[in-house]
Amino acid sequence: MEPLTVVEEHGIRFRYVPAGPFLMGSEHGDPDERPVHEVTLDAYWLSETPVSWSTYCDLMGWHTPPRGVPRHDFDGFLLWEQNKIRRRYCLDEKQADTDLFGTASLEQVVEWEAELARHGVVLPADARRPLRYDTKPMVSVGWQDAEELCARLSTADVRYSLPTEAEWEKAARGGLTGKRYPWGDEPPTPGRCDFDHLGSARIAPSRDLPPNGYGLYGMSGGVWEWTADWYDSRSYVEGSGGGGEERVLRGGSWADCAEAVTVSFRMSRRSAPWNADWWGGNVAPNIGFRLCRKDVSGGDP
Image (cartoon, rainbow, N blue to C red):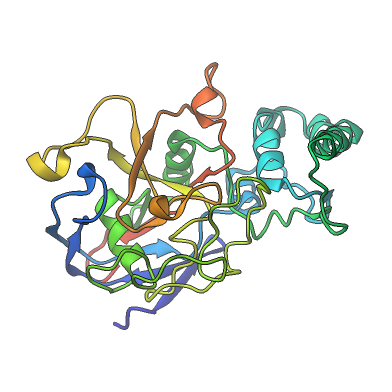
């Protein structure tokens, strides 16, 4: 089977990652990225992009926000703000629309623009524009939310999950060995990767930049992505599984520097489901996820 084989389910395109060994880690990164070691994996599929806001709402059975709502350059923070009241999608769609897309939000935008102007920052004339919920990643989402979606979609024949840390890194490398980024060792640029622009907080649509060798978009930059593994700084040395309260995040984001968007960089964070009393760990406009798909019935995934 060719590695660029595509399957589409639930409105999500998945790319094939072939079985076999790969070299995980980097001798050039932080201590928790060392040593480089060989990992062998079965074949699997990974979603072509991080799950979008619209797709997530559709699959959870929630009211889907309109796609043409005018917004401004700080869409990363606006998506963050909106996710904080997702509970109302389930309880009161009319109130959700008022809160998410009404005059209060627009007034908030104007206040932000005025504050920027006081500091000498003037937004371009085209700064306000549609958020494009169908093309941009879901953010401010916990790994519990991602796993709830996986459980909802999984069947006796097909299992959906967050990728393990190894599955994520193998997919991010796109068939390359020993390279720092999905495209090779050349430094990231705006034409390759959505990174290092905390000042604008504009999230690029997932397919705006080139895919890697497996046809996957946004494996470097864009949004941090949850994995299925608990973080352990010595797991590469001791071969131990992580524990505790923090899950591994991979990929870096629009807010991070070049060192954080390598294929081997590791980060971790706590989180809670969207309807929990404590939700603080999810309040980040640069954390999302993508899905891993496996055929439970055997054979190729």
